[in-house]
Figure (tube, rainbow, N blue to C red):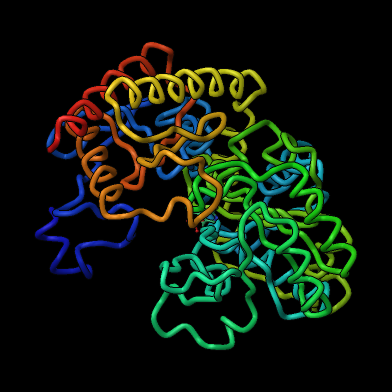
Length: 426
Ligand code: PMP
């Protein structure tokens, strides 16, 4: 399949994150917490479409909702009741969200949040955390990937993609994670031009460690003091709790970008927030400050799938995910120690990440992989594939509700085997 793919797609690929050297495995089907590849191998799915499939595959409520909606019609040039239902659920669950607009991907959700902050404040600049991933909007990609050669005291605004316009770099200020004083200094210098601070409360690429509560509180206080907004990227972190990370931390951002689990396995994104800010999208009094459309935006198949998936996600689901997550984090930590490997397993709830480095993870720079860690991560990823566990090549794991404690123990024995093999390498 990869040979066929290489002829019609650059590098045989349409999604950089799923490429594996020398070739990716091709998925055939999924059921519960398992996926099968086209060669008939079965895996515990511990990546769940990069955190989106919180119920794994084939949840009967989601399937029923989708099949029935397909028979009714899949997309219309008119709003449908399905988007009201999902918007109402999100408003009810997320303390800071009074109104919602949907989009087709998390990238778009983040983009609309950034544009809303600009439209509301009339200012150009965005502050973001060095190394944090927020999708592929130019402005959200700045300083995603900065090599040690660029590391001064403060992060530089570096381009992720070749050809990024200088204007994009000029309007994004990168800051170190969990560093209140650095944020305050940036606001002291540029406060009047900053539309908002974009922050993921547990940024995956910056190490998957949680933001400190006092840091998030200070972020809101500093931003508001300068008339700027705080945008939470909860595209992934919504799966941390019934009311997302904002519920766990007790912080109300002005805007929240959403995606992944709210689409029940279909393409989705959204931005939600305070009604006063969300009014930038309002078309009822003429052209809005921020016009926003999209042919497949709020399409009813996604909305119905998302609604079914979210309704099934109860407080008990989160307790279950936390308990198997904790079992796995502890088991992996023990296994690393047993094999004498420098490493750690960090994360919360249904998310965790393995780092082959001993010092405490603090930010993006602390997880920038040296050659030996890169080698270990690669061996770990492939060692897990060989033992029937699918994870992300960079050490991220995301669990699903159908997983049981027994499944977690099977996954731990695969992890132990993969780590033993790494430890035996010369
Ligand atoms: N924000 C975060 C934190 C993400 O992890 C991602 C995707 N992994 C996005 C935004 C972009 O979402 P999408 O891939 O749906 O565009």
